[in-house]
Image (cartoon, rainbow, N blue to C red; front, side, top):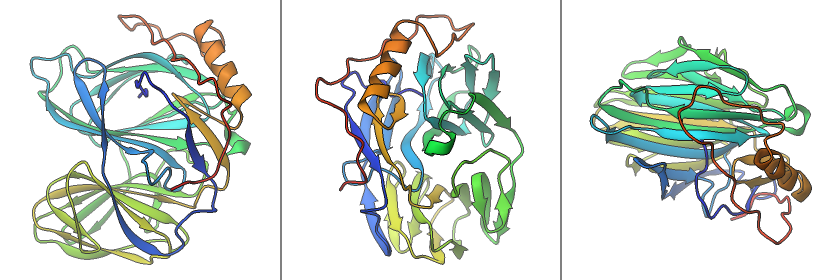
Length: 321
């Protein structure tokens, strides 16, 4: 998914310097962003007070939207570099196309994982014949320096491992949770899991104390470490936890995101994750001149133009609050 904000600004993220090294309960409110003509998303990362959670650098939550008489998601071809995109649905379908030739319909609780590496472009759209409701999340994972120039590729996994307990089904989207490991390729130690809780469930989910974590509320009513989280909000949890208390007052859906605090300092501008001002500007130039990022074939419409890069120099920085 693209960052369609036409006032694209510098986002500073990465670095261990300001990682909270102990458990916290920091509730993050979303910023509402229009995505195309008919989809509004709630942007949780990057946030005014929290830029990353492990290598997770971008989180949008959208829906449930009634698109029975609407075109639904329509995101034209756009570029990425230095990151992975994770498409995750609770309802609806998204048709993915990219410049490597991938064409894949992603359905609820299937993993669509695109590794941009050095350069890729893609589009996302609701199929012409689609379900009434669209509900999901789109996430980015920053690639570490050793792997950020890999060849671009796309993975689709319809079957994913699960961790179960009374009242809980946890689907491991990316990384690992309680010994279950996703087949999706991860380049840093991390966790991405979809938690489905039934009403009345109370449990403690095992965590890695070396990871920092956050929980995104997708649906229903749940308490995370005694904090009520409403759909479309995110609770940042810090590090140092060996377990996480969860309580559902109704059937509820959550996403658990975590990982080792990301060591490197990054520049994130528009749809690019880089390290220097020069490479961000070169990426924009390459996209606008039609080189390097390839072509998305089959999409009925024009591709996105990049916004102008700010006149000031883009500097890589660590985490800020």
